[in-house]
Structures are given as C-alpha cells and as structure tokens.
Length: 392
Image 1 (tube, rainbow, N blue to C red):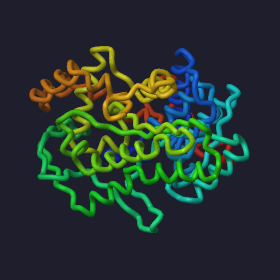
Image 2 (image 1 turned 90 degrees about the vertical axis):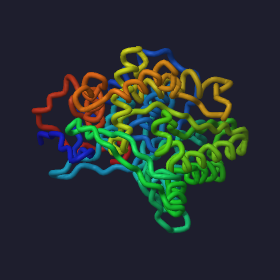
Image 3 (image 1 turned 180 degrees about the horizontal axis):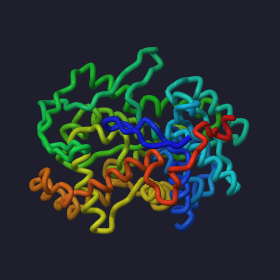
Image 4 (image 1 turned 180 degrees about the vertical axis):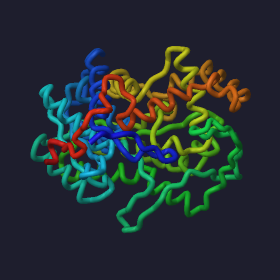
C-alpha cells in the first residue's frame, strides 16, 4: 500500500512505517555519535512510543547501553488503515535495538490501568529482577482513575479570560483568541489527568512488588514556557496539574530505599497536541527561528541525550532552587526570550514567514508521522500491518 499524509486540522490520520523507521534510526545515529553515558542499565519508559518518551528510550539504550521496557498505547495497522505512528516507532526501535544486541520489549495498553502495571511488573521479574530507572512520559487527554471515574483535562486559564494573538498554521492567518477560565471541577479533573497521581501509583506498585532497585532514579516531564503563555499554561489549569507533579516528585524523593525522584522541565517541541493549543504554535515558530540562528535549536533526541548524559546520570543531579531539572535552559536564555518577545510585537500575516520558521514547524509536524523524511521512497508499497517483535 502507498501511504500518504492525511491532515485534518492539526491531526494526521495516517503514519508511514518506513518513514517512522528512518526517523527512529536518525535518532539512534545521533546518540551513537555522542559520548557514552555511565548510568542506568534497566530502564522502564512509561509512554515510550513518541516524542520525549521515545527519545528517552533511545538515549537510554544507545548512550547508557541499557535494556529497556516501554509502555505504549498504540493501534496496529489493519488492511486499509495504517497503524499509529507510535506503533511503527516501537516496531522500528525494537528491530534496530535487537540488531545491535540490545534488549527491548514493549507492553501495549493504558498506562493508568492496574493490569498494565501488573504485566510490566511480571516482565521485570521474569527478565530483569529489578529496574534502576523509571521515566514517566505520559500525556493524555483523559484518565480512568482508581476510583473508577474517567477524568478529562482542559487547557484553560484559572483566573480571568486571556486574549492574545494566535496563528492558523494552515493559512498563516493571525488573529486574536480568548481563552476562558476553567471551572473548579475542570481544574480538579486536569490535576487528576496531568498531575502526579499515576506516576506515584507506578512507583508504589514497583516498590511493593520488590522490583525497584536500591537508589533507583525516576523522572517525569513538564513544561513552563515564556510569560506570554503563562496565563494558559504555567498559571492555567495545566499549570495546576504540573504543581501537583512537582509535589509528587518531592514526596517520592527518598521514599523507597534511596529513590531519587525528579521533574525535568523540557523545551517546547512540536507535537500533535501542541499544534492545537492557541498562541503556542505562533510562539514556537518564532522561537525556532531565533534558536536556530543562535545555534541552540534542539529536538527531542538532543534534549533527552543531554538530560541523561549531563544531568540525570550524574552522581549529583543539577537542579534549580525548586529541585527541577531545567532542560529548557537554552529556550529560556534572556537573549532568546528578549528577541522572541520583540518579534511577537511585530509579527503579522504578511511577515510571519520572514520572522518565524513556519516551514520548520510543519517539517517537524510531518516527521512525527514518518513523512517528508529524506531518503524514504514514498511512492513505494509498504507493509502497513508491520508488527512489534515483542508483541507478536
């Protein structure tokens, strides 16, 4: 079957298996080109099939030489429907890791579900004995909690409505958008979905099962961003959930046989969900231009390699005054933010392609799904029912 991208709004409904494989291989090749890291050898990545989670798994495997188990929540391909990009990414990673002599197995299911935790624990007991690093990289719009209720997250303010400019990336039309305040119930639901409860449940389960190594490390991911997005992010409903995540890290730290628990604040990157957030895509298009000009632009793999090599695998993990690992340090440099803020006051429909990097934004968007990657023959027939080795 010949697979082409089908983009509806900010969602791509197809993925390309060979394109995804090429993208995974490029990330692997990047890590192979970097100095090795002395660190964890048995790494569990919860949310391992795309973005920062996938990059974390690749960095752990190819920089630390770690065995990895990845928890994913992806759909396989059918006769006329492609699999999700995360499915193809995982298939490619397992195939390439096996060829390089690395252990890599995956569990496909909802990370919030108790049965998935039990399956992962069973696999750790059978194959490893204990796990020495747990990376939590789950981002979902909803979550079924242990109380049986399904909660949903919202991206809203928590005070008054917030109005600023945004861009329609399909037309480059710039307009004003207003984000309304969340209700108390919506904020509470967002905390349930995006806060630290499930991360804590994972660590409790691993410890109770006796599979958490002494002195293990665990990290979850967050974002803070610039002041112009604070009303809808840092101070908004998502921000309240992230505060719960930070609190969870402090509660977990030192709790189980010397466990070290951290939150890493990462740089803004293109994801399927970020494309739909008002204000953020315009900010990122300006940010990419500035960071590329200054030689500071990073994608997921550069960030996650740097996280492991320079921060998480050090004996003394460098953190800020709030005990956060700041991987957004390049993005938040004053010279970067000052220039982006200046461009923000000047940008309009006529000059957005000049002042921003819309092409880079779209390139990264398509690459998420395995499209527009150099060296891939997109006119060729491909097997869309490609399987994941450990799940077959």
